[in-house]
Image 1 (tube, rainbow, N blue to C red):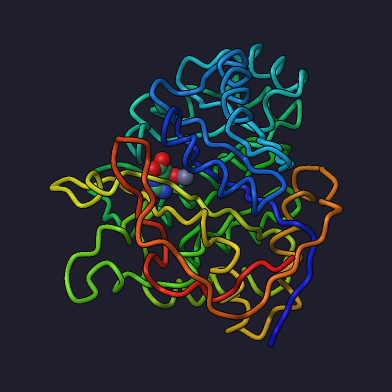
Image 2 (image 1 turned 180 degrees about the vertical axis):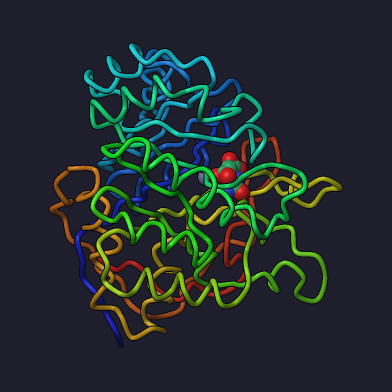
Length: 345
Ligand code: NCD
Ligand code: ZN
Protein backbone atom coordinates (compact mmCIF):
# COMPACT_ATOMS: atom_id res chain seq x y z
CA UNK A 1 0.00 0.00 0.00
CA UNK A 2 1.52 3.35 -1.03
CA UNK A 3 1.41 6.02 1.67
CA UNK A 4 2.73 9.55 1.52
CA UNK A 5 3.34 11.96 4.41
CA UNK A 6 3.86 15.64 3.66
CA UNK A 7 3.34 19.09 5.15
CA UNK A 8 -0.29 20.17 5.13
CA UNK A 9 -0.86 21.70 1.68
CA UNK A 10 -2.36 25.10 0.83
CA UNK A 11 -4.75 25.90 -2.01
CA UNK A 12 -3.67 29.05 -3.84
CA UNK A 13 -6.93 29.55 -5.83
CA UNK A 14 -10.38 28.95 -4.32
CA UNK A 15 -13.96 30.18 -4.88
CA UNK A 16 -16.06 30.01 -1.70
CA UNK A 17 -19.04 32.17 -2.81
CA UNK A 18 -21.29 33.34 0.04
CA UNK A 19 -24.38 32.31 2.07
CA UNK A 20 -25.58 28.68 1.90
CA UNK A 21 -23.04 27.78 -0.79
CA UNK A 22 -20.17 29.09 1.34
CA UNK A 23 -21.45 27.19 4.39
CA UNK A 24 -21.50 24.00 2.32
CA UNK A 25 -18.10 24.25 0.63
CA UNK A 26 -15.79 25.89 3.21
CA UNK A 27 -15.45 22.73 5.39
CA UNK A 28 -14.09 20.67 2.46
CA UNK A 29 -11.25 23.11 1.80
CA UNK A 30 -10.64 23.93 5.48
CA UNK A 31 -10.23 20.25 6.43
CA UNK A 32 -7.72 19.52 3.66
CA UNK A 33 -5.69 22.73 3.42
CA UNK A 34 -3.95 25.01 5.90
CA UNK A 35 -4.56 28.22 3.94
CA UNK A 36 -6.27 29.28 0.75
CA UNK A 37 -6.25 32.30 -1.52
CA UNK A 38 -9.90 33.35 -1.71
CA UNK A 39 -11.18 34.70 -5.01
CA UNK A 40 -13.15 37.95 -4.80
CA UNK A 41 -15.69 37.43 -7.63
CA UNK A 42 -18.83 37.62 -5.50
CA UNK A 43 -21.90 39.64 -6.45
CA UNK A 44 -21.07 42.41 -5.75
CA UNK A 45 -17.32 41.77 -6.03
CA UNK A 46 -14.92 42.25 -3.10
CA UNK A 47 -13.36 45.56 -4.14
CA UNK A 48 -12.38 47.23 -0.85
CA UNK A 49 -10.45 46.30 2.29
CA UNK A 50 -13.62 46.73 4.36
CA UNK A 51 -15.51 44.27 2.15
CA UNK A 52 -12.63 41.78 2.30
CA UNK A 53 -12.46 41.98 6.09
CA UNK A 54 -16.20 41.34 6.38
CA UNK A 55 -15.99 38.44 3.90
CA UNK A 56 -13.08 36.91 5.84
CA UNK A 57 -15.22 36.96 8.98
CA UNK A 58 -18.13 35.29 7.19
CA UNK A 59 -15.74 32.57 5.95
CA UNK A 60 -14.25 32.01 9.42
CA UNK A 61 -17.76 31.47 10.80
CA UNK A 62 -18.06 28.46 8.44
CA UNK A 63 -14.80 26.75 9.49
CA UNK A 64 -15.67 23.65 11.56
CA UNK A 65 -14.76 23.61 15.26
CA UNK A 66 -11.26 22.35 15.92
CA UNK A 67 -10.09 22.92 12.33
CA UNK A 68 -7.26 25.39 11.80
CA UNK A 69 -7.61 27.25 8.50
CA UNK A 70 -6.56 30.69 7.29
CA UNK A 71 -8.30 32.39 4.36
CA UNK A 72 -6.03 34.82 2.48
CA UNK A 73 -8.08 37.58 0.90
CA UNK A 74 -7.79 39.21 -2.51
CA UNK A 75 -9.00 42.49 -3.98
CA UNK A 76 -11.09 42.42 -7.17
CA UNK A 77 -9.52 45.05 -9.44
CA UNK A 78 -11.82 47.32 -11.43
CA UNK A 79 -11.19 50.37 -13.60
CA UNK A 80 -11.93 52.39 -10.44
CA UNK A 81 -9.80 50.63 -7.79
CA UNK A 82 -8.36 53.06 -5.25
CA UNK A 83 -4.61 52.33 -4.95
CA UNK A 84 -4.52 53.87 -1.44
CA UNK A 85 -7.23 51.48 -0.15
CA UNK A 86 -5.46 48.49 -1.69
CA UNK A 87 -2.06 49.43 -0.23
CA UNK A 88 -3.56 50.22 3.20
CA UNK A 89 -5.49 46.93 3.13
CA UNK A 90 -2.28 45.07 2.30
CA UNK A 91 -0.34 46.83 5.06
CA UNK A 92 -3.13 45.97 7.53
CA UNK A 93 -2.86 42.28 6.61
CA UNK A 94 -6.31 42.12 5.00
CA UNK A 95 -5.26 41.79 1.35
CA UNK A 96 -2.67 39.19 0.35
CA UNK A 97 -2.97 39.97 -3.37
CA UNK A 98 -5.18 41.57 -6.03
CA UNK A 99 -6.97 39.80 -8.87
CA UNK A 100 -7.21 40.97 -12.45
CA UNK A 101 -10.29 39.70 -14.26
CA UNK A 102 -10.43 41.04 -17.79
CA UNK A 103 -14.02 42.32 -18.12
CA UNK A 104 -16.39 39.50 -19.20
CA UNK A 105 -13.67 36.80 -19.18
CA UNK A 106 -15.45 34.47 -16.72
CA UNK A 107 -18.04 34.09 -13.91
CA UNK A 108 -18.89 37.46 -12.25
CA UNK A 109 -16.30 39.42 -14.20
CA UNK A 110 -18.64 42.07 -15.61
CA UNK A 111 -17.01 44.66 -13.31
CA UNK A 112 -13.53 43.55 -14.35
CA UNK A 113 -10.80 45.64 -15.89
CA UNK A 114 -11.47 46.85 -19.46
CA UNK A 115 -7.78 47.53 -20.19
CA UNK A 116 -4.62 47.32 -18.08
CA UNK A 117 -3.85 50.84 -19.31
CA UNK A 118 -6.74 52.02 -17.12
CA UNK A 119 -5.22 50.64 -13.92
CA UNK A 120 -1.55 51.54 -14.34
CA UNK A 121 -1.46 53.66 -11.14
CA UNK A 122 -2.80 50.65 -9.19
CA UNK A 123 -0.30 48.26 -10.79
CA UNK A 124 2.55 50.70 -10.13
CA UNK A 125 1.54 50.88 -6.46
CA UNK A 126 1.40 47.06 -6.32
CA UNK A 127 4.89 46.81 -7.82
CA UNK A 128 6.19 49.38 -5.33
CA UNK A 129 4.64 47.69 -2.28
CA UNK A 130 5.23 44.07 -3.32
CA UNK A 131 1.53 43.18 -3.69
CA UNK A 132 1.21 40.21 -6.06
CA UNK A 133 -1.02 40.52 -9.11
CA UNK A 134 -3.11 37.40 -9.79
CA UNK A 135 -4.35 37.19 -13.36
CA UNK A 136 -7.20 35.44 -15.07
CA UNK A 137 -5.10 35.22 -18.21
CA UNK A 138 -7.49 35.27 -21.12
CA UNK A 139 -8.24 37.92 -23.72
CA UNK A 140 -11.95 38.38 -24.32
CA UNK A 141 -12.23 39.70 -27.86
CA UNK A 142 -14.93 37.79 -29.72
CA UNK A 143 -12.74 37.19 -32.77
CA UNK A 144 -10.19 35.23 -30.68
CA UNK A 145 -10.94 31.50 -30.50
CA UNK A 146 -11.72 30.32 -26.95
CA UNK A 147 -8.86 27.78 -27.12
CA UNK A 148 -6.35 30.54 -28.01
CA UNK A 149 -7.35 33.12 -25.41
CA UNK A 150 -4.70 32.25 -22.84
CA UNK A 151 -1.79 32.18 -25.28
CA UNK A 152 -2.92 35.53 -26.70
CA UNK A 153 -3.16 37.03 -23.19
CA UNK A 154 0.37 35.86 -22.40
CA UNK A 155 1.75 37.38 -25.57
CA UNK A 156 -0.33 40.55 -25.93
CA UNK A 157 -1.07 41.62 -22.35
CA UNK A 158 1.11 39.92 -19.76
CA UNK A 159 4.51 39.90 -21.44
CA UNK A 160 4.35 43.65 -22.24
CA UNK A 161 3.08 44.38 -18.72
CA UNK A 162 6.01 42.46 -17.18
CA UNK A 163 8.41 44.53 -19.26
CA UNK A 164 6.66 47.76 -18.34
CA UNK A 165 6.77 47.02 -14.59
CA UNK A 166 10.00 45.10 -13.94
CA UNK A 167 9.34 44.69 -10.20
CA UNK A 168 5.67 43.61 -10.38
CA UNK A 169 5.17 40.09 -8.99
CA UNK A 170 2.57 38.04 -10.88
CA UNK A 171 0.76 34.72 -10.53
CA UNK A 172 -0.73 33.50 -13.78
CA UNK A 173 -3.70 31.63 -12.31
CA UNK A 174 -4.88 28.24 -13.55
CA UNK A 175 -2.52 27.98 -16.51
CA UNK A 176 -3.80 25.65 -19.21
CA UNK A 177 -1.24 25.89 -22.01
CA UNK A 178 2.39 25.39 -22.96
CA UNK A 179 2.55 29.11 -23.72
CA UNK A 180 1.37 30.01 -20.21
CA UNK A 181 3.97 27.72 -18.63
CA UNK A 182 6.73 29.16 -20.86
CA UNK A 183 5.99 32.75 -19.91
CA UNK A 184 6.06 31.84 -16.21
CA UNK A 185 9.39 29.99 -16.54
CA UNK A 186 10.92 32.88 -18.44
CA UNK A 187 10.09 35.19 -15.51
CA UNK A 188 10.38 32.71 -12.69
CA UNK A 189 12.23 35.03 -10.32
CA UNK A 190 9.02 37.06 -9.94
CA UNK A 191 6.27 34.88 -11.39
CA UNK A 192 4.36 31.83 -10.30
CA UNK A 193 1.47 29.82 -11.70
CA UNK A 194 -1.27 27.69 -10.23
CA UNK A 195 -2.40 24.52 -12.00
CA UNK A 196 -5.81 22.86 -11.42
CA UNK A 197 -6.42 19.12 -11.08
CA UNK A 198 -8.78 19.04 -14.06
CA UNK A 199 -6.21 20.55 -16.44
CA UNK A 200 -3.72 17.87 -15.34
CA UNK A 201 -6.22 15.02 -15.64
CA UNK A 202 -8.24 15.79 -18.77
CA UNK A 203 -7.89 17.20 -22.25
CA UNK A 204 -10.72 18.88 -24.14
CA UNK A 205 -12.19 15.55 -25.28
CA UNK A 206 -13.58 15.24 -21.74
CA UNK A 207 -16.08 17.98 -22.58
CA UNK A 208 -17.69 15.70 -25.17
CA UNK A 209 -17.11 12.18 -23.79
CA UNK A 210 -20.18 10.29 -25.08
CA UNK A 211 -22.19 13.54 -25.01
CA UNK A 212 -21.99 17.05 -23.66
CA UNK A 213 -20.40 17.11 -20.17
CA UNK A 214 -21.29 20.31 -18.31
CA UNK A 215 -19.37 19.33 -15.17
CA UNK A 216 -16.13 19.36 -17.17
CA UNK A 217 -16.75 22.93 -18.31
CA UNK A 218 -14.57 25.56 -16.67
CA UNK A 219 -12.63 28.63 -17.72
CA UNK A 220 -10.00 28.69 -19.00
CA UNK A 221 -11.46 25.75 -20.93
CA UNK A 222 -9.76 22.33 -21.13
CA UNK A 223 -7.18 22.28 -23.91
CA UNK A 224 -5.49 19.85 -26.33
CA UNK A 225 -3.52 16.83 -25.12
CA UNK A 226 -0.14 18.47 -25.82
CA UNK A 227 -1.02 21.20 -23.31
CA UNK A 228 -2.13 18.69 -20.67
CA UNK A 229 1.22 16.93 -21.05
CA UNK A 230 3.09 20.25 -20.78
CA UNK A 231 1.20 21.06 -17.57
CA UNK A 232 1.97 17.63 -16.08
CA UNK A 233 5.64 18.28 -16.75
CA UNK A 234 5.43 21.72 -15.14
CA UNK A 235 3.59 20.47 -12.03
CA UNK A 236 5.61 17.32 -11.42
CA UNK A 237 9.04 18.52 -12.56
CA UNK A 238 10.08 20.12 -9.28
CA UNK A 239 10.18 23.71 -10.59
CA UNK A 240 9.40 26.09 -7.70
CA UNK A 241 7.37 28.51 -9.86
CA UNK A 242 4.46 26.05 -10.22
CA UNK A 243 2.10 25.38 -7.32
CA UNK A 244 -1.22 23.94 -6.26
CA UNK A 245 -4.36 26.00 -6.92
CA UNK A 246 -7.53 24.03 -7.48
CA UNK A 247 -9.80 26.78 -8.82
CA UNK A 248 -12.56 24.86 -7.06
CA UNK A 249 -15.58 26.76 -8.37
CA UNK A 250 -18.95 25.47 -7.13
CA UNK A 251 -22.13 26.07 -9.10
CA UNK A 252 -25.48 24.37 -8.39
CA UNK A 253 -26.13 21.30 -10.51
CA UNK A 254 -29.17 22.78 -12.27
CA UNK A 255 -27.18 25.89 -13.20
CA UNK A 256 -24.46 23.78 -14.82
CA UNK A 257 -26.82 21.32 -16.53
CA UNK A 258 -28.60 24.20 -18.25
CA UNK A 259 -29.06 25.84 -21.62
CA UNK A 260 -26.33 28.35 -20.76
CA UNK A 261 -24.41 26.46 -18.09
CA UNK A 262 -22.02 28.04 -15.59
CA UNK A 263 -18.24 27.54 -15.85
CA UNK A 264 -16.43 25.92 -12.95
CA UNK A 265 -15.36 22.52 -11.60
CA UNK A 266 -16.10 21.86 -7.90
CA UNK A 267 -13.04 19.87 -6.80
CA UNK A 268 -12.62 20.71 -3.09
CA UNK A 269 -13.80 17.31 -1.71
CA UNK A 270 -11.22 15.38 -3.75
CA UNK A 271 -8.59 17.95 -4.63
CA UNK A 272 -5.59 16.48 -2.81
CA UNK A 273 -6.47 12.96 -4.00
CA UNK A 274 -6.78 14.17 -7.60
CA UNK A 275 -3.33 15.78 -7.57
CA UNK A 276 -1.82 12.72 -5.87
CA UNK A 277 -3.23 10.54 -8.67
CA UNK A 278 -1.40 12.68 -11.23
CA UNK A 279 1.90 12.63 -9.33
CA UNK A 280 1.66 8.85 -8.82
CA UNK A 281 1.00 8.32 -12.54
CA UNK A 282 4.06 10.44 -13.34
CA UNK A 283 6.22 8.57 -10.77
CA UNK A 284 6.81 11.92 -9.13
CA UNK A 285 5.44 11.51 -5.60
CA UNK A 286 8.82 12.80 -4.35
CA UNK A 287 7.94 16.15 -5.98
CA UNK A 288 4.46 16.34 -4.47
CA UNK A 289 5.28 18.23 -1.28
CA UNK A 290 7.10 20.94 -3.22
CA UNK A 291 4.12 21.55 -5.49
CA UNK A 292 1.44 21.24 -2.81
CA UNK A 293 3.04 22.64 0.34
CA UNK A 294 6.30 24.52 -0.31
CA UNK A 295 6.31 26.44 -3.62
CA UNK A 296 3.19 28.50 -2.91
CA UNK A 297 4.29 29.78 0.52
CA UNK A 298 7.71 30.52 -0.93
CA UNK A 299 6.20 32.73 -3.64
CA UNK A 300 3.99 34.55 -1.12
CA UNK A 301 6.80 34.95 1.42
CA UNK A 302 5.07 32.79 4.05
CA UNK A 303 6.36 29.89 6.11
CA UNK A 304 5.20 26.43 5.04
CA UNK A 305 2.70 24.67 7.31
CA UNK A 306 4.35 22.69 10.11
CA UNK A 307 1.67 20.03 10.48
CA UNK A 308 2.11 16.76 8.53
CA UNK A 309 -0.67 14.80 6.87
CA UNK A 310 -0.67 11.27 5.46
CA UNK A 311 -2.57 9.98 2.44
CA UNK A 312 -2.90 6.37 1.34
CA UNK A 313 -3.39 5.14 -2.23
CA UNK A 314 -6.68 3.28 -1.95
CA UNK A 315 -10.29 3.70 -3.01
CA UNK A 316 -12.40 6.09 -0.97
CA UNK A 317 -16.04 6.97 -1.32
CA UNK A 318 -17.21 10.18 -2.97
CA UNK A 319 -20.79 11.42 -2.68
CA UNK A 320 -22.85 11.43 -5.92
CA UNK A 321 -24.07 14.89 -4.98
CA UNK A 322 -23.93 17.32 -2.07
CA UNK A 323 -26.95 19.30 -0.80
CA UNK A 324 -26.63 23.08 -0.62
CA UNK A 325 -29.26 24.10 1.94
CA UNK A 326 -32.59 24.11 0.12
CA UNK A 327 -31.16 25.68 -3.02
CA UNK A 328 -30.02 22.63 -4.95
CA UNK A 329 -27.11 20.24 -5.23
CA UNK A 330 -23.45 20.18 -6.10
CA UNK A 331 -21.68 17.59 -8.22
CA UNK A 332 -18.00 17.31 -7.31
CA UNK A 333 -15.07 16.14 -9.43
CA UNK A 334 -15.00 12.28 -9.43
CA UNK A 335 -18.64 12.19 -8.18
CA UNK A 336 -19.84 8.60 -7.94
CA UNK A 337 -16.35 7.25 -8.70
CA UNK A 338 -13.94 5.98 -6.05
CA UNK A 339 -11.45 8.58 -4.77
CA UNK A 340 -7.93 7.40 -5.71
CA UNK A 341 -6.28 8.45 -2.42
CA UNK A 342 -7.62 8.87 1.12
CA UNK A 343 -6.31 10.89 4.07
CA UNK A 344 -5.47 8.65 7.02
CA UNK A 345 -4.96 9.68 10.64
C1 NCD B 1 -14.75 30.49 -11.86
C2 NCD B 1 -16.03 30.78 -11.09
O1 NCD B 1 -17.02 30.05 -11.27
O2 NCD B 1 -16.05 31.73 -10.29
N1 NCD B 1 -15.07 29.60 -12.94
C3 NCD B 1 -14.21 28.79 -13.59
O3 NCD B 1 -14.62 28.16 -14.56
N2 NCD B 1 -12.97 28.67 -13.21
C4 NCD B 1 -14.12 31.76 -12.30
C5 NCD B 1 -12.72 31.60 -12.81
O4 NCD B 1 -11.80 31.30 -12.04
O5 NCD B 1 -12.52 31.78 -14.01
ZN1 ZN C 1 -11.03 30.79 -10.40
